[in-house]
Length: 435
Image (cartoon, rainbow, N blue to C red; front, top):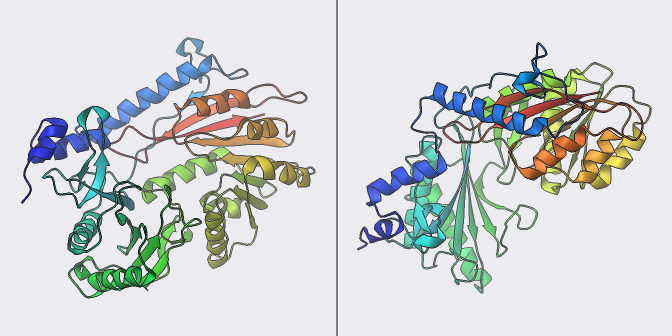
């Protein structure tokens, strides 16, 4: 039997109150009505742009020439998410000590050095999570608690069961992937657990989850990407199918896809409007991931060239282009700073060059910015900032506006916030630069 002491020691509250504390940590705006959440985010972007104004040479004042606003460009009203609750199509659950002290609890990890070991809570009461994901996590928790193998909370603790990934589509299809640390297990022991896991979800107590696919991954690394540790399909389809605008996407366990697809459609609509492509345009899609920007915008331009460092994402992008019959796209596997000079050299005669830069939270390498600023035929650049207040992002934005050795500089002309993450303090900011 497990008691209530763990939550009390961690937060000084009961297990029931711990769930509310978890919601405050993961979704800090959940107590606000959604229109008020949008106001908070709009104000945050306004303040951010005012901070950036002094670092961005060559910017233009806000509409109407009102320099007292101190905004370096036009700021649009935040684009709301069409879906506010239960929008997340992907969750990764860990295993740890729960609020009742049970060491094999499946959920989200909350940690604080001053409060001792991390606490694991199911997250079934978070407003941005889907109930079917929570049901799958609860079923996996039953499986783990019945397993002869211990859970793995740290790589050095000797345990095995590490995590559960759950993905779903708008059509209601569900995929799960379980990661196991092999430690020193013999192959026969791993195979026995693989079979037991498949049977549990196919015809056993977990069958009510109605999984369309189940995958298994062996990984002893700190990070378990599909390139490092390939997923093994135990049963079901090879990938879920999702629709993003007019494009079909195949979503495998390791594929990148925005967690809020309806809001992502709004994001890419803003990108398309900002890029202002013509039939003569060549689009550079940098940090392209699985290629959504290229696939959606290919019909608006002559050619799209995507560059992505993750090989499995490039594979997915090419496959998605194939199933959609899109032929004017090319996806290159490699680091952007290494591949971009060759691509720009090949496009030297292109008169209408547009770039979309969609990096992670750390932005792109300074060398990439230098290469883009120095490209004389680049007339417009759209930068998608997923963490616009990150110092590397701010450095990228300032560097984009620096005058090149020759030719005209880029100017920040427009900023459009898009809310992909209701109830959280995160958003996407689309920034448009023009010669």
